[in-house]
Image (cartoon, rainbow, N blue to C red; front, side, top):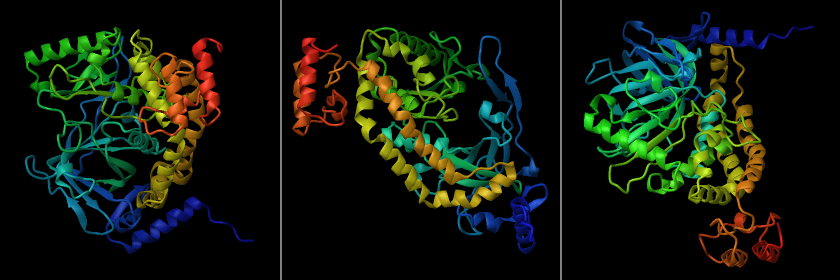
Length: 487
C-alpha cells in the first residue's frame, strides 16, 4: 500500500526544487526558499523592499495611561531603502531608486495601534518623490504616502466594496501584493492609499481646512484637542500638520470643535455636520455589524473655513471588527451617534432611515455581485496562487475562496435584522419619511403605485404593510394609521 505524502512536505519539496532551479531566492521560512520569478508568477504584483544595511523596521510598545484606552506603539523607526514593484515580469515596473533623502528611494516603518502587536505587521511607506504605486499611469494619482496592511479575512475588501456601493465621499484605492523585505517573504498584503490631504486624488482639503480623527489613541500623539463629550477620545490632526499649527490655528480649531461637539447635543447640528456623510458612515457600520467603537477610525474633514462649510465624514477605515454584531446596532451607532438619533431635531434620524430604505432591497444582491466579480478578477487569482506561500510563511490555513464566500454571505444574514432595527425607529405609515403620517404620505404611496417618476419616492417606505409590493392595501394602511384606526 502506498503512503500519501503529507501536503506540507509536498509543498516544501516543490519549493526546494524551484530553489535549485532559480538564481534570485526569497526566504519563505525555516530555510525554505522560492524563486522571485515564482512569486511574480502568482499574478499578484511583487513589492520588493531592500533597506540600507538590511535594517529591519522596529518600534516600542506602549499602553494607555490611566483614564484612556488601548495599546499602541511609539518610536517607530523610519528605515531608508529602495522599493521595486514587479508585475508579470522579472523587470520592475516601478523602481524608487537607491535611497537619497530628497530625490530617490523611500522609508518604511511599522504603523498601527493594536494591529502592530501582530507578528504580521502593517507598514507605512514614504517615497522620496511622489508616484503612483498602484500603477494606474495617472499623474493625478501620485503621492508620497502609502500603506501596506493585512487583510487575511478580506474584511477590508468587503468594507471598501460597501463604501463604493453606498457612495461614501472617498474610497481609497488598493491592490493586493506579495511583500518581500530584505529577501524575506512577508506574505500577502494590501497596498492602499493612506487617509490624507491630496487635492488631486485623495481628500481635497484647502489650505485653511482640516482633516482630523476622533481618536481613542490621542494620548500617543504630540498634539491633540480633547473631546468635550467623550473623555476617552481626542481629536488628532492629519492636516494641518501639528508642527505647522500656529497659536491662532490652535485657538480657532479648539473653538470650532467645541461648537461642533456641542451642536450634537442640541437641535442646531445641521449648521455643523453634513447629514448625508454622517448618516452613511453610521449606516455602513450598522450594515457591517462592527463591534469596535474605539479603534474604528472616525475621520472628519472640513474643507475650508467658510461659515457655511460643514463637517464631513469622508471615508470608512479599519474593518477588523466587522461581522461581530448581527442582531443589534453596531457599537459605533450606540456609542457615537445616540445624541443624533435621540435629538429633538429628527433630521439626522430621518436621513438615516431614508438612506436605509433607499438601499435595503438591492444591497444584498449588489454586494454579492461585486464580491463575486472580484472572484473572477486577476487579483483574486493572484491571491489564490499566493495562498501556499502566505500560509507557509505564517503557519496559517487561509482559503481565500471560502473566505470570500463568507464575506458575501454576511449580507444575507445581517440585513434582515437591520431591517427590524430600523423599523423600530421608523414611524409606521410615514411613506415620505418626514416624521409624520398625513395625506402627503397617501399621495406618496399613490405615486409609487402608479410608477410616477419621482426621486423622492422610496418603494421600501411605501410598502407600508411590508408584503413586498406597493398597492391599494398600503394606501388603506396609511389612511387607517393617519386616522388612528391602526396602532
